[in-house]
Image (cartoon, rainbow, N blue to C red):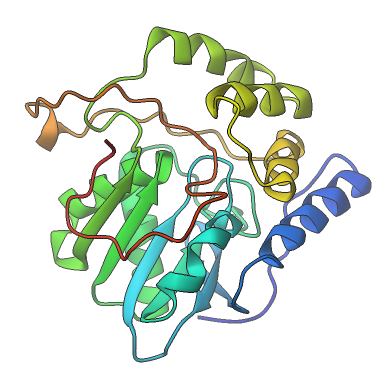
Length: 259
């Protein structure tokens, strides 16, 4: 584990890079605690983790939704870090300060290996694990593949874990995959949040991920271990900030699922 700053991804323009990281830092500045930035090397590259909370606290690893970056937990981290040693992760291959300059992540198995290396690099034998949307999908799969590493699991609107995406959602999301732009991302989040106020600094950062040189996404599929689970859930996973304008949630408990 090292605290040496990562070499950033290759942006199309220097201005684009400056805008993105200025927006990233603006959201991080809203954290009510000052995190320790830590870079964890692995065969996949370098993973940026923001660490805070008591050093002897129970470890809690946070996995954000697609594109949201680790900064998204600004409304939650103050309360969580009172008792937990919080590790907010910039997922490898996505927008943020992690650098994906090593082995590609082509499959779910690659992400499991990445999380194994991340836990090892942070010196974590086991942790409470919380994930939102795409991060929830990764968290559940990791708990199934490495149950000895996960004490409790909190899933916030996890993508394709207990129900599939609606046709309406898929049609709205297609343009973001085909050709993401700042305007399209803003429009999508406005639709997805149904008019609920979203933190403007985070929304600006989320929109600027359109210009971030991200790796090809591993499309989520329902974990095999839960394909037989039947739940009355209509799922609309999102990149929007969990509890972006509300109070910090209580510490996650085992098996927490949306609605």
